[in-house]
Length: 217
Ligand code: E4P
Image 1: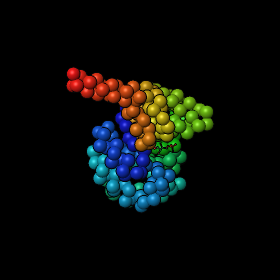
Image 2: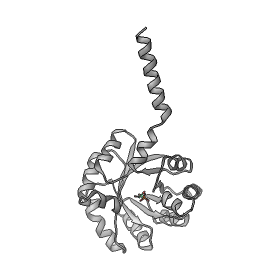
Image 3: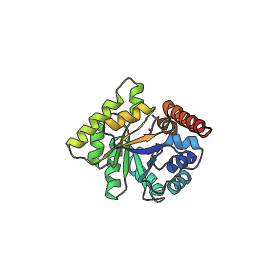
């Protein structure tokens, strides 16, 4: 499973990129709004920082296919890494087909059912983003959805990749990996938590202490 970061904060993206584990970036309108910056400026900077990743998702907000296509023009002009994030609607599906004919990658977002994922894949989506956390919030099993989509995509030989999104904690990450997600897109706070373990910290301390004691004879 690959790691994307779910953020529009360029400093967070820079820090995670330095770790050498980053394969992509996803943004959404709420995250960009939080940055308080112009969308295209943020995207240009992200593409510059994460120059070796496979994809940087940028979401369109129009309700109709023509609006989505128009909105995507200044975004795709930034880089061929820009993946247009399209909402899971009938108009969104039409847009996916049109983008895919132009060779523009797409990420169908706000996926909450296996049928939605299947429709998106059949329309030609590069990625689908089932939202684990938001399903868990309403007492549905987000991990089970990933497993189901993964089984369907394998069974029907679909090469659309599954991005486990709306990840809230480290357990979601290992569960997504076991469930067949190709990618997990993680908020910075979760990436930080994935690395630390109290026994690692204790172990480092103990090795240092033993080493120093041995030096003192
Ligand atoms: C995915 O691409 C979305 O940006 C994101 O994962 C949404 O997560 P949230 O439910 O924490 O807002």
